[in-house]
Length: 482
Image (tube, rainbow, N blue to C red):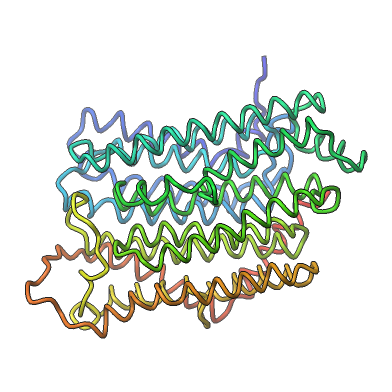
């Protein structure tokens, strides 16, 4: 029987706090009206404690018998995961009260999903990786269908469940093939066998392809992207904010551990070709289809497909340059995407109706602070300086150029230019279009505005002074070297 040591438990203290805190809130809410009423605030407290535990806790490196690695990379990504979790819970409180459906189980499930993402990102063994993936995914199936009186929310939850089941099946089948080829589920052992053998056997190649395919579903990469627009549109907006960044960040980090550990770029040109096709197709399709969207949540869904295509460029390059670029990009994408969805939640009074971009006409002058926050996030998503989105894209494309993949960087820049049209269209609608004759009722929330403003402020500050973020990302990337 495996009995965890004290150091093992301390290494996982943030995840333990999230799981225990979520369970305690859920149990207490069954008996206490006060806990039900302030579940959002209590969850924020638990998330802050988890963040403190991660920042101030030990970094033992390999722990839990080599299944997890709590290192600089883990700390870097966990801070952004917990930040996204904090902002999503912050938005959810006033948003669900506005819809008169605030329930404590929402926050418990959200924290469990956050713990799953953290386990997944720190995994160095395929079994713990799969455990983290399921702990992340299962709560999200429920959260997407949380508005059970709304057909579109039930549909979103069902679609995400079906796609998630396929993704999990791909991943677990890939893990079985990797075990069959190498006799181990340790990513480190598998990587060593590939690097020392200088070749990938057909069985091993099929296993890696199955895992990457399963991860492709979670990242909504082409051709695994079909679920994203409907799930983004139908899910509750605070859930969509979380779903759009945290699962993708966890999968990207897991991919980095696999690609860097196996040195796929060096040992297999097939990996370069296949991954580059997926990256380019995701960028191109995501941006072109986003051009014609009229619903802002669907637009951000297709935008997310394109952004994961950009991130895949850094994963392909890997090494210090590629990994650093991807990590900076994860941080940037988290802040600007959650900020954008916060403003969508601000303007939304119901999930039964479409979130039309045209509804924002003239709101730049009527509601200047939310409009400014959304404008900053749109500029950053487009990659316009001096915002952090520009820094992230610059580092990704620079890493491709340094690796000799100039054509991949050029395609990325062209796609980024295309994306500017639909992002700037939102800004144009805010400030250049007249207010509609029939005013759209907005149940304004100061709390949601504050969450969006905090995200936008971070986007500006890190864009002007990105050095600390870049330095932390480089230190985190060094953890991948063996």
